[in-house]
Image 1 (cartoon, one colour):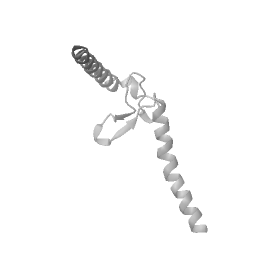
Image 2 (cartoon, helix red, strand yellow):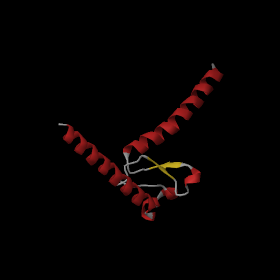
Image 3 (cartoon, helix red, strand yellow):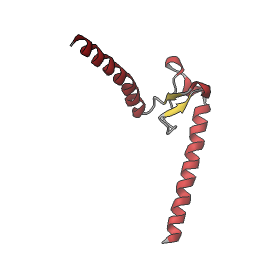
Image 4 (cartoon, helix red, strand yellow):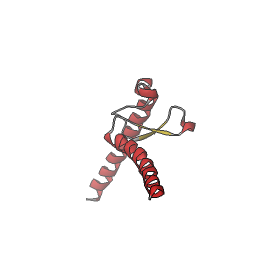
Length: 92
């Protein structure tokens, strides 16, 4: 039984390493950076948040994944909701 767990761990490590290689390759491909304002879109890249082309500028969303759209919605809705709340309180 112990040998089976070691094999499973090695297989999972190999899968993670190969996915990291895929992520790096996809990030480096300029075709994945086209679109609206140079946004990033790659279905093969497993990450939702990826470093921008110039990593010193922060992170961006991988719009090929639904979770990116939910993240964007949250980033927009929360501040707008707080502004609306402040507006309603000031009128109250």
